[in-house]
Image 1 (cartoon, helix red, strand yellow):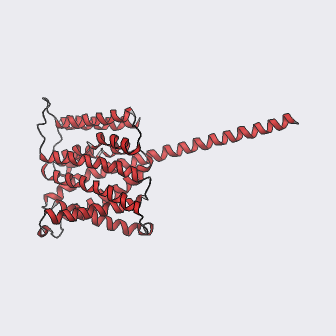
Image 2 (image 1 turned 90 degrees about the horizontal axis):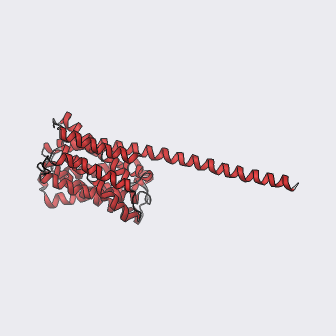
Image 3 (image 1 turned 30 degrees about the vertical axis):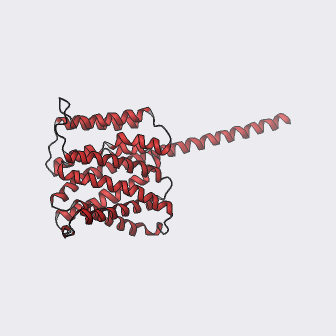
Length: 317
């Protein structure tokens, strides 16, 4: 009788153990799927941002003020976003506002330097130099999370920068094609690195929709303030033709949609992986610029782009 009871207990124990093992496997599989869906979403962000560089250039070519363009982009985007999701954003806590202000400030600084850089350099180089943020993100991630990234993370980031270097340097290792617009873009990359890292940090603590809305509004307000400080209010003009199309694309497909995807998807992946995937904007931008702006892709640019793509694929292994 005791043996029978013991057999039953052992049977129950192993059944429970087997059930727990099965639940764990299912959970791991679900996390695996979520991570790769998130990675795909971040790749879409890279594509939309890549085309965004072209529309920024198109808008600036119409003579629109950079601060005015960006203010419209973020304020209109923020307002539209609120009207779509207002039912889920009834109350804003102090930590929501703090998170939105921090991320929004880095977003403002990143886009301010990037947009002014785009006035001087090409859309392709503006995109490639922006992707330098991948080398900065791992260090910010280290500071925020107190967790040292894996060696492969640093290796992939360095490979990505090598690809950007191939585009920038000539055969004598001189930065022959660097101009002031490129320098502004490189500075913007540092601020974007902070924006990416802080988004990953706060997206686990704050409701993603609230974070998206607040960072867009704060960035928009900062652009408005700087417009009136550094620009002539007479530069405000009616939007029509390509200027209207540019603002429309940048507001919806290069701000609202990518910001939503970035904030939601970063919950299921690391800031470094997110940075590498979104850096594909530097691959898609010159392709779109070639077809829409007539910018020519040299062999050096193609090789550099291939190295960047290799670093992203390597990070996924």
